[in-house]
Amino acid sequence: MTSSSSYSGLEEASSKPHLCGAAKRGSAAVPHHSNPDRPETPIIEFREVGKSYGTFTILDKLSFSVRPGEHLALIGPSGSGKTTILRLLMTLETVTAGEILIDGRSLNREERSGKIVQASEAHLRRMRAEIGMVFQHFNLFPHKTVLENVTLAPVLTSRLSKEEAKNRAFELLDKVGLTNKADEYPARLSGGQKQRVAIARALALQPKILLLDEITSALDPELVEEVLSVITDLRNETNMTMLLVTHEMSFAKDFADRVLFFEQGKIIEDGPPAKIFQEPDHERTRSFLRKVIAAGQRV
Amino acid sequence: MESFDSLVSYAWFILGGAAATLELTVLSCTLGLIVSLIAGLSLLSKKLLVRWAARTYIELFRGTSLFVQLFAAYFVLPLAGIPLSPIQAGVLAIGLNGGAYGAEVVRAAIQAVGNDQREATIALNLTRWQAMRWIIFPQAVPLMLPTFGNLAIETMKATAIASLISVSELTFQAQMVRTQTGGTALPFITILITYLAIASMMMALVRWLERRLSRGLVSVRT
Image 1: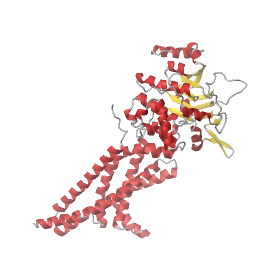
Image 2: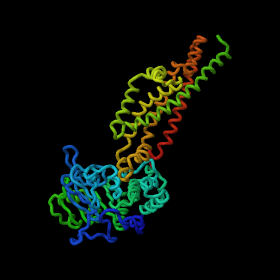
Image 3: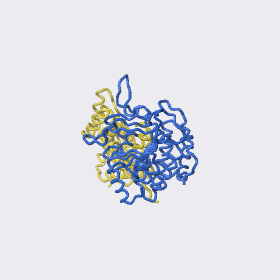
Image 4: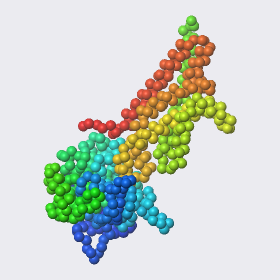
């Protein structure tokens, strides 16, 4: 369904120098262990991040960092805070304690007249430019055609002219195998097709970080594969940093360089998939995986 | 019993009022629509003062009768140095009254557009204004239309009240015929049918708009 040629537009973006901080990224996949002599600025860093709704705490003093180009899978039981992490990164939720850094710059705070204050809408918009997200329920714009869904944001954010946006949209729709649906409205697409359009839409802004929030959970089982194969191509052909929240353990294992297992807002395990899925350190992880296998999943 | 010819000429005289009724309806609906959009969006503003101003307007116009508002526009505004023609006063009162109801329709429809759409606009880095202009508002319009259709017909019927400040619209003309001829059936049946005809045309227009503007929003089973 998808061709094996590279996502040329995306590579072009990542080779451009960025204004702030460590934007240099190798074209090859980043090795799992960083060189201690040459510490690299993490593309994402959580510093004692807290998130609570009133008295209900989801995340408490959560710290971890992600290297540029890393493919991270976030797994764990429902309500463990995985999706919240993506929503905080996309600024759909506000951090209630601590700080998130993107490429060394604070996401949720900014300096104004010598004081550190809560990030303004303008600051959030600058920071969001690096981040794209694909949602569980696609969230396509139903009143816009497939093509318009993909071209809307690049044109409105003045990154591309209408013509350029259209060209890139067709390029991306080709990658996800949907050029023939360009003029359809989303209501006429299957779930898998909708999700592939949503992926193309997120890529149109050429993010450095792509957040994938349970992107196959709302799909009929026979449609899961077409979406996962698009993600696999993306993973292999770009050097975007990708964070995947998923309940598909076998996909997490194939996709990720590194897996984080969450429970109650805490990271219980952190390591390469081979370790997490075969010899986890904690009994809690083992029992979670046993339950997943019992539910019929191949791990 | 009067001759058939004079009955017809009286009916034509009454129908002459339809022009004024239509004029009042179109102008009042236009004013009401503009005001409902401004007030409805203001109700959702981040600024407290803006929300408060919109709320005050709505409560003022919903909480007092159209009758009083019309007389205030026609008889009180001139005292403040703003003399209005009967048509102007009628449009102002009827339009602002309808706008107060319309504002709530606008607010409710915008809020009814799912949060997932708002989140998608954030993820695509649109500004709040762009999100409203291109994503939220276009999806809210089809939700507003049925209620706006009702409000437009209410507005059309409310134009009868302008007869009280001597606008020679349908009701005014009918009253004239009634006082001149003493006949009741002809004038009232004539305006009843005319109002009904105008309302039917408006309904057809709203239904056409609904079909046109809900492209893509109705899920199509394939």
